[in-house]
Every structure is written in structure tokens, then in C-alpha cells.
Image (cartoon, rainbow, N blue to C red):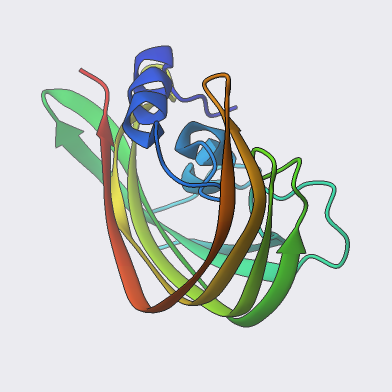
Length: 177
């Protein structure tokens, strides 16, 4: 089982503090960010696919299915540690979905015409199978409507906003030292 080191999870949580409702805690999305490994050994050049519901949204009805294509690129040394290099590519388009207020810290969030593409590269330590380095990018587009009362840090903040994104690009790099 692949695990995200506690220090990386803590750093990701700190980086996400203060974002608006619906963004969630990036450290909760690690199951999506980390590669899913196939059963049995693989050789460099091997590929495999996994189709799962949209990440981080357990308990919501009619979730869009996302297919991720993984590729094992072989061994690469990162900071003197031999690592397994795995790339992952996912995409989805035209997602229409309502996220309940309980998921969005008290704010109901509706996605319309939402799409995303992700290209991630993971480096797994060959000694403990933990993620040593994760890097890549996720791009999103679509409209997000958020309405309700945000519960954050003991405060209640009224929210009623619509965000239209032509393209939001997020670069991801997390490393374990």
C-alpha cells in the first residue's frame, strides 16, 4: 500500500488553509494523487488503466467515472534514493454535479460544464514504497456556484459566489526530505 508521509500530508494541509469552500483539503485527495499500483510485477513501459469515481467525493450520487492511464517508466534516482517512476494521466469533460454543504465546509457547491486534465509523475522509494516526490499539473475549467455559510475557524461566513474559469492551472510538487 502506498502511503503519503505525515510531513508531506501536514505541509499540504497547511498550504490549503484559507481557501474558499469547495476547494477541500488537498491532503484528503492523496488517494487520487498517488498512483494505484497493479497486482504483480511490471516492467518499464508497462501501462495499466483504472476507472474510478471522481476523487474525494465519496457519498455523492451519480459520480462521473474517471479513467486514469498509468505508465511505469522504470527506475530513477532522486536525491540518492532509487525510485520507481510512474506517470499518470486523467481527464474528464462536461461534468455537472452538486456537492453537498457537508462536503464544502457548510457551503453547497454546484459544478457546471466542469472539466479537468491531470498529468502527474510519482517517484516511489524502492526501499519503503512511500512517495518521495510527486510533481505535475492539473488544469480545470467550468463554472462553480457556491452558496451557504462557510464554517471556518469558529466563524460563520456567508458565501454566494459564481466563479467561471476558462483555465485554472495548478502545478503540484510535493517531496519528502
